Length: 177
Image (spheres, rainbow, N blue to C red):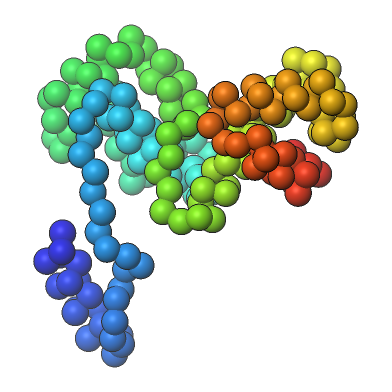
């Protein structure tokens, strides 16, 4: 990857008469060493076009391999991957549903990405909490002591985010939630 990145940077810089790095940071890779991590990576990759607003569903992106994974039509995807898909998902609807689940694992490059990710996780939990408890406004959770304590404890357990950060997310952005 280092050779590929540096060769590309040389060509790009020569073409556009510029110098320096083309990519933001050093290439980073992580070994996919567990079944759980494999599924998290697959969902993350397939959902990137959705995350940046190119499409509503990951399967609508024309350059995605999402549909090929389930259909078994690509020569680029290994037989082992097809076998894993067939073992884990009995129907295409199960496979599509898997991609619609909110990703709890973080694949984040910047502090800003982490803030957005944390906001989204808290938003999902606060909406569920409000629905379950028939609460109309986020402000109610912040002002009623027992509700606040219960929600912060639940949210911390589900997300791993500190209660202080959860409360700050709710306070600074409760109009959006």
